[in-house]
Amino acid sequence: MRAPIRLGAAFALLTALVVPVTAVQAAECGTANAALNAPVTASSVETGSPFTAASAVDGNAGTRWSSAFSDPQWLRVDLGASREVCGATLQWEAAYATAFQLQVSADGSTWTTVHQTATGTGGTQNVTFTGTGRYVRVYTTARATQYGVSLWEFAVRTGTTGGNPPGEQLLSYNKPAFASSFQDDGHCSQCTPAKALDFNPATRWATSPTTGWVDPGWIYVDLGATAQVSKVVVQWDPAFASGFEIQTSATASSWTTIHTVTNGTGFKQTFTVTGTGRYVRVNLTKRSGQYGYSLWEFQVYGTGGNPTPPPQAPDPGNPLRLVWSDEFNAPAGTRPDAGKWRPETGTGQNAELQYYTDNRNAFTDGAGNMVLEARREVTPGSACPVDPVSGSGTCQYTSARIITEGKASWTYGRFEARVRVSGTKGLWPAFWMLGTDIFKGTPWPASGEIDIMEHLGREPNTAYQTIHGPAYFGGGGIGAMRDIGQDYANAFHVFRVDWNSKGMVFSIDDVTVLTIDKATVEATRGPWVFDKPFFILLNNAVGGDWPGPPDATTVFPQRMLVDYVRVYQ
Image (cartoon, rainbow, N blue to C red):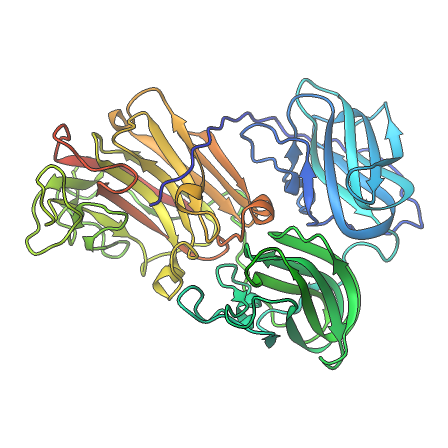
């Protein structure tokens, strides 16, 4: 558990309907979609909704972008380099535009209109035109409904050789990597070049602080055989390059530059390139600051080479299927099911004041609930931060923390629990998840954390939902809160996250509180570390940096009641 930032959110949903229409595609215009999974931005996103810009270019006709309820609106795709564009397909949701323009631009600011209509009919529209630009935009000026505008898919055609090459795949995963230098110290242990190619955004390569905080620097990968390179992705640590070149080579000695960047922005950058070689190098020519260079990920895509398929997890099915649950219907006094949970014992983190016992504070109540009970109870021989009530550094409170680690873990799905939280000042109940690799050498926050519910006794009407990663953690976590106008401890509430390869949607009592888009996080905050297994935690903490300690008004014992925990995939 860590303290999140507070960003309120609400939501509204629209009924989805696709009405296809017949159109003719020009023979000279290719069928490949150059916009597929390309960087995309929009004028707005419907408040509180999961209908993000990236959903319109993900190749999935079941996901969509939806705008705010006003005119004008726009959706802009970055093709990565200047391209000859010959057509587009717009697959509208029921909230379509009657008037819109298709535009191209070299810089994303000055636009040339290549197609326009004031009699849009919605459905699926195939449009042909000619134009050249790095950016393609649909600019809507009149809506057909009182809602916004919404697109299931926006595809861009660039001729018979445009779009993603047939058979394009990741070529660089776990291939030999070499660099000008690397860091290995207390600040970045074993930050070797291989860490940028391991398909793990929680690990990184960094140049040496003794020899590598200079220009130029470089990192290159041996693809194992000659490859036709079509795309390069770099996910920067804050120590990014503002100037660099992407290069290929047959020998790793003589290099050909296939793309040059002079105004690098950091975060995640995707470049559409054309080149041939066994080796691909990022030649770093200008640092953005006083430090060196550092990459979470360096990925090369194309055909040929000698690729090793990276690990992939399937998205949850539709409809969802219950795959794991605990209903806590055992007789009163039953300890947590050892086949599903194990206790974590000892003192907590974050200046917490409790001592977690070996399930002595976790038991069923006979009414279908698991109890996690916080008590004012001394643990002899223990050491906690000084309790302001007693003035003692011996742990003055006991409680429970149970986890599924070693029993069950999951990548993606719906995770929900029906919980009645504990209350009064100094209590900190939570339902959350951690990456399983935290027990395999990956430290927090690189392991990732998903807080499905956190409640502070001093803020009885509010619950928080947050994620933490290596570039957004503690008070900088990405989160939101919901104030229900009454104490959460008065009744049970359902806390949920729906999580897949595109992001997460958090809700409380079926009200969407927070929508997080993976592509947006990568482009604006840092690496996404949530495409791997996570396990569940339930705990009822006492004290800590965020909730503050108990005082003389705090009532003990305090019970956190859990009616059920369920996982769907």
